[in-house]
Length: 313
Image 1 (tube, rainbow, N blue to C red):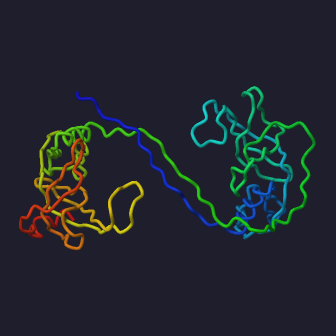
Image 2: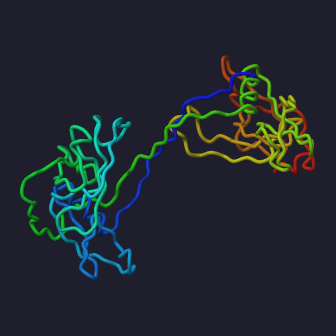
Image 3: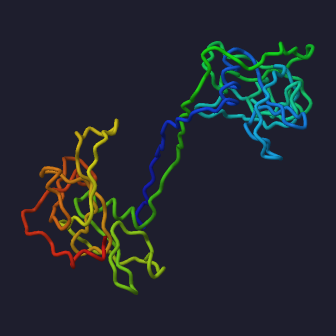
């Protein structure tokens, strides 16, 4: 059996969100080395604060300062920190109830080892040297054997409050395409496009999936398709992606390769974007060393009749 491919992949994007009055005050407070909670109608103080009571759903905005000291309620040791975590050396993830709060928050606890951590351990906030109005303004917690901190009674009103945050989201994983798509990718390296035929309905799927999505039976019979095909549907891209050196506007299309019963997608080039149309006959354009076509261009053939590709829309 040929070796199944695998490769590291990263999905990453910045998540931007606006803040309501409670979260704005909480994050602005961290920037100013103040920890704020919110008081519910029955007198509980919630840290981190929320804008609605989780029990009654009542809107709550009564901000109250709590101490920067507290108690570990539970914890787990992290022996191998990952990229982007609060500390680069082994640390504990700890749930800490700050003095004056009735709920606890999760953050990193800097300790020399797991033997130095326990439920009931007294800790205090270690502030980041540079603070911007984010949860990372608390660099971590650290063990503390002094007196409880004393809140100054801050009202939660600040100049220049934080009104929005950008949270980078990133997922690192290893992807394996499996037997069917490994064969498909290997064929592309030879400038061939290979699908698989369902033994029941006889449809040819490109890219192959290893099983027929209609019949649910395994597929193994390989069928070479294309290289020419027909544009079934398309869109005009007007926003330039920062990681693609392609000038806008350009066209991205679904292309039904000759002999295939499933359309794949590709960029259309060699023709003005406003002349691309359904039924346009196209062929792949390869660049040296590429594992897949750079784009598809018109073949010069007459447009395909709608009835020949309507089932692939």
